[in-house]
Image (cartoon, rainbow, N blue to C red; front, side, top):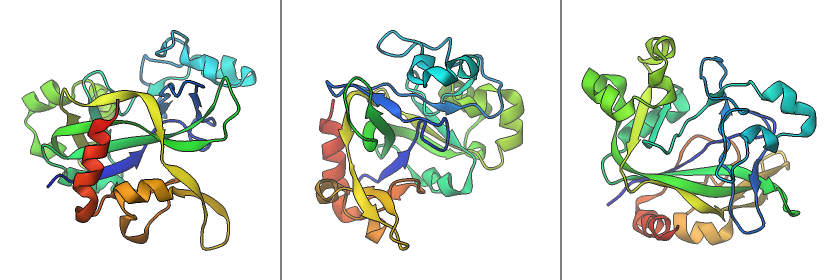
Length: 238
């Protein structure tokens, strides 16, 4: 039985200050978060999205000058399909095994039409390998994870390698052409509005053992009784 985990990635109001753009035909741009170390050569100004526009154009006009040379933390990356994270909330991803699914979702808002910010599934990895740095040989790190943000920058890698968890997706992994909405509005314990897994998606993914909030959360693990249904759904998407 496959394990299925969902994690939020990409810019949001707290990291980047925007939501990604959603277009009226259901397509979208994946805009990664800013690089807090300012070491990557890829910037919002020199990185072109799938629609042929530099990513900086999706920021408000008042911020484009300041964001043009801001380097990008490209993670996950869908060229060689890798994801890495050294933080404790993501440590459980080391439990992923070959054939499991790591599902990525992000915040998107209407760009060329009116649509409020919601959360959408944007892609997935069909896991080939996962673990901490120490689980891989030097050759495996280079061959499997050489394009990952945390591995490609030596100083960052050296400072994070003790805690870094890496996930490699197989060739069947993909970034979707069209985003799939998964959120609705709920309330937290203080009565404040938060984004939660929608009732429709609960029929597919379950309720994460009662932890319905997906606004900013640790990875959400699909309960075993829903994992096959969830995996079939994800693999059916384009």
